[in-house]
Image 1 (cartoon, one colour):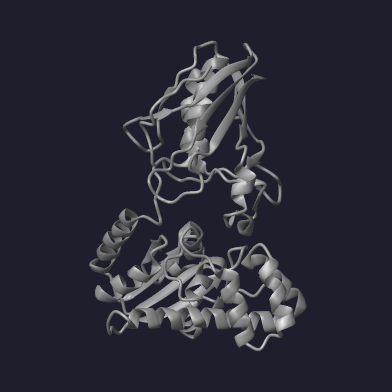
Image 2 (image 1 turned 30 degrees about the horizontal axis):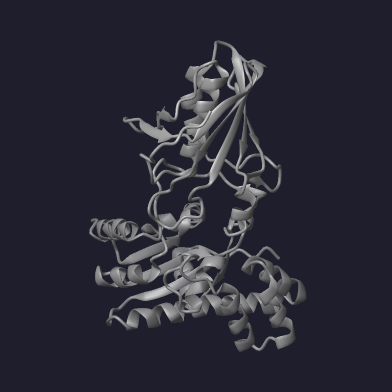
Length: 383
């Protein structure tokens, strides 16, 4: 049974829409009528969310049921907009322990490359557990088959594969609300955080600006978080550099995935893929500048990603590839300083460190390397 409804809830992450469809499917499985609006309890949040579900119906009454929701990430640029989410709920038999919920990644849902397990965040799993367990009869186990019909094709436009997630989109939201990294509102929020960091009593003029959640996680694991305040940036890199200079930052380290920071080497300072890409073009231009033969560089344009180009070059000449990426890190620093100089004159030194798909600190520009040495952090060489 389907129902037409106005969208009364937007700006929510993918795990929330999955949980809403799952709850609707489980209600139908338990013999209840379809409910187009689901009230969800959210971990670490006092007030519930009311989330729309598009449709739902029993497949085999009493055995399994299907519900469908449609993702609405809010007004920002987001490739999950209007993404259909299918959740099939079925009984798993008797279950008395913590293993009452089995999650099966279906078509379009991301798996970890190594063990092929569902790629899901603790938040997403807790959200499902919190909202489904109260619906189940005592002792019953539940199986959920999660399906994103176009998830596989959408995942090709993300960097998921670079971090070992294959076959589709990962369910890795860490909160209910979308943090719109490309929106002006997110820039304003980040600027507020920047001002708070630099006004704190212990601020000494150093800042690590990380690009994305993977960068923040690496800053923790590498010990950078113990050396300087860490601020997570969205896609507004250029304005943040200027703002950092204005509030008195003197040494700023840019830390990010090479497939993201390489845009800065090409002078692209708003890095959302909807607005500008050019990564392979930047890589090719810098390779030619470094003296690579054109016949070796030209085929890179046909590859799917910077990561694929890196592997291709590395297989041909490992040492030259390492030198190329060091040069790219240096270009990130130089272009960032040039960008800053267009807006004023400040004593801000910008360094850059790039990490690879295995989240290893691999390449640094001259200033970035000096910052790391000062802070007692080393680059990692997998060879």
